[in-house]
Each structure stands twice: as structure tokens, then as C-alpha cells.
Length: 569
Ligand code: ADP
Ligand code: MG
Image (tube, rainbow, N blue to C red; front, side, top):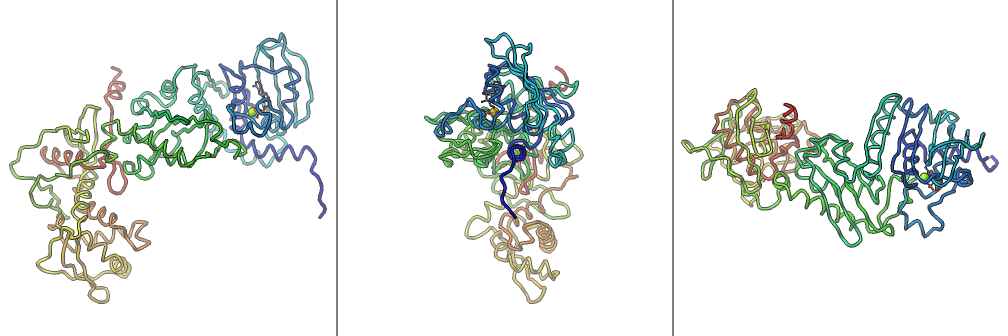
């Protein structure tokens, strides 16, 4: 094998591969150039998801003929002169790589005219070769047309997704540009269709409203924190407004869209206890920081950044989001912020909530008047109106209509009760008058054997009795009325089916959650009005009323705003 120096064509294609991965990468680079050129209007036109054509037109500063020719050379940039400048970058581009990279893998045409020039320059390039250069008539600004992307790199072409998928990447990208640069008017068309049209606005919120919809905006809370070297701003959603993916999270550092584990973690952390697994808050968060504290030069497509003081940035963002959430009553409840009163579900001083597995009922103090739906310390008020399919409780509060899953709500209440009861050295436990012997299958016996201590910690005393036999001696006080054998078998079955069951060592919480689930009223159970009042009251007093112990949502809200909108009031 002999060593050779690659020719320019190959070198250009390799370099292009780093920067230009798909049509969205071209759009990103071109729009960044337009923004860097001070454009106030940018339009992006696509054909076939960008594969056939991408055209970006701006009213920015334009280029002279000399600059336009030079800009096609690798490492030609007007944004950087020495290495130190890398830590003083306020522009989106800085490497002088985008135009030559795009030129290497497409049919490229640039028409550009500075504002003080009378005519424009048109340059046509095919696979890095300038094939035409002449004077043209065009308005001030720049129009870059990229045709037949990857025409000479069939491997890249093969990796492109469907037209719809490439288009959705581009739409998401353009949406985010409108967050970072709301003062710029942005328009995206695909063939004949207008996909995004964002007139210029002065503020982020109107961009968010335009793109995520009015009801999204209704449930967003402003985030604002100023420190000497750093500012955090933007919007995050209340914990009852979430998405199943991070698609509605947009993070920016010095107005640059970034992916950042540090920032994602900092934004989501304050929601941790409030959100179900697999649910993500909506967030549009801007971090503006002294450029000296960010390394923007760590990723080929500039999609990631590194903070010089990573932990401090994390703390600042986390604090900003947390403080924003604490300002809202609903979030206060969900975050367990402030001193939530202990659960008083089922009335005070009464025996434990009944939990017979076959016919679970709620054990309420007889004859007690239903408590008025008073504002609780955490601010969640839920006045029940009725039941749907004996499964969901319909309730009302100042925010609008709430639909509550009765089983999960009760599960949450019982779970916290069990948690409190089993927190002390002596868990609230009730001995069985007749200890009960059960015989289990091998897998269940193994699961139980390894977790006897955890069961004991929640008030369930069980002893091995040789082979597959076990003796149950005591039950958690809250579940004293349940059939011990049914409870134990149900618990083991449920635990065995969980991912944590495979590891055999179960956290105490898993057992509490399973016990709460077992004892909670089931879907399909009719509830008396007073029972609903008590259940919702208990829920309001719980520390995390929005998420059941298994991580599923408990409450769905239809805001007053949404109601009015649907009825076109
Ligand atoms: P970079 O953005 O990293 O400088 P590019 O290859 O993207 O590198 O662009 C090279 C140069 O071309 C830029 O520095 C800029 O001077 C000029 N340029 C590119 N696009 C435009 C545009 N739309 N308007 C004005 N100048 C542009
Ligand atoms: Mg650039």
C-alpha cells in the first residue's frame, strides 16, 4: 500500500460530508449566513424535501464580486481573523466551510449584491468548479440556490429519508430560528405550499405562540435570570403540559441552536418528581453568556457547544427554571415546593383506608359533612362535578376543566400514605390473627426471598418456611383489610412483570407502588359525591398530584381558554 495525497475533489467531498449531512444542514448553513449578513427577511424555498432544490434569499449586506468568489474557497470567512477570535464569536458562522462544502456536492448558484452596488454578481458552481461568473440584475442581498444535492455522492443520497421526513427536519430548524431571531421575518415554502410564515416580531413569546399554538402559550411560564456573566431567558411549560418527546424543546446559547446534555438536564431536572417517565416539558430556553466562556468550535455542524464553567451554567439554568415553576400554583403542588400538609385522605384519626381487593371501598368518616373544596396550601383546588364511565372524575377549578383518573388519583394518595407510614423505624403494621402459609412458584419465591427485608420495611412481615413456602405474619396497617394471600400474589405478579423485577432486588418504592395500585379503587367503580370530594381533596394534598407512582398522568386539564376557543366564544 502506498501513501498518496488525495486530490481536491475527494478532499472537498470528505470535508462536505462533515458539515453537510442532509438538506437541513444546507438550510441551516445558508440561513446562518443570512442572519450573519444582517438580513431582516429570509425566505427558504424547497422542492422535493430539499433534495431537488433549496433556495435561500435574504436582504442582508450582500457580497462584492471578489468576496463572492473568495467565499467559495475553503476557510474563507469574514468573521474570524485569528485563533483568539474563536472565543469572541458573536456570529453563527466562523469557519468559512459551509459554502465550499455545499459547492462540492451540488449545483450551486449565488446571486448577490451589496446595498451600495448597482448590479449583482451571479456565480454558478458545479462540484466545486466555477462554470459561470457574470453580472446580473437583482435586488440588494443574496440568493443562494442549491440544486441536486449529493448528485455526485450516491452514498449520501441513499441515506436521505423520505421527502416528508427531510421537510420536517427543515421545518423544525426554521421554527427554531424564529425563536432565536424573532425580529427577522422567515418564510418557508415547499413546492407551492407555504409551510412556515413568521412575520418579524419583537418578542419571543409571539414567535412561540405562532409556532406552538395559543393553548401552548397559555401554559408556558416565563423564565428569567440575570447574573453578571450570564442570562437565562425564555419559556417553559407548566408540569401539566408535556410532550412525549423533546420535539418542543429548543435550547440556544448566544442565539445559536444547540444540543446540550448540560442544558437539557438543567431544564428537566426541576420537573423530575412531577413528570411521568417518557413525558417532557416544552421549553424554549436562551442562555446568553460572555463568548469567552463558551467553546463553539467542538462540533462539525456547530450543533454542540462546551461551556468553560459547565457546572455553573447548569446551576443557573436549573435555578431559573425552578424559580419559574415555583411561581405557579399548579407547579408548586407538583414540585412538592413549600410545606405540603400531610395527606389527610380518609379523614383524620380514623382507621386505615379499607383495601379489600375484590370490592375496594373508600373508608370515610361516617356522617361527616364533605369538606368544602378549599384552597390547599399548594394551591390545587378540585371541585368534583361527576364521573364519566365510573372511571374518570370530572372536576372544575379556576384554570378550567380537570379530568382525573380515579384509580391513579387514589393510588397516588395511598402511595404517599404508605410512604409516610413506613418511613419510621417501626412501619405501621398489623399482625395477622392467623398467620398464613402460602406456596409460591419458583420465580415468585425467588423474588420474595430476596426482598423480604424490603417487604418488612413497608410493614409486611413474611418469613421463609422452607422450599416454596412462606408465612405471612403481618400486613401494612393501611391494608389491614386486604386478603393477605391475594395481596401477596398480586404484588409478586405485578413486581415480576416490571423491568425492576428482572433484577430481583426491588426498591421500597416499587413495593409501595404495587401495594397502592392493588388497594386503590378500580376503574369502573361508582363513587358517591362525598367520596369524590375526599379523593380529590386527598389528591390536592399529595405532593405530586399530577403523576401516579408508576409515572402515568393523573390529571388532564382543559383550560378555560381552550373551552372558549372550541366553542368560538
Ligand atoms: P462562514 O459563515 O463560516 O464565514 P461560509 O462558507 O458560510 O463561512 O461563508 C463564507 C463567507 O461568505 C462569509 O464569511 C460571508 O462573508 C460570506 N457570505 C456567505 N453567505 C452570505 C450572505 N448570505 N450574505 C452575505 N455574505 C455572505
Ligand atoms: Mg456560514
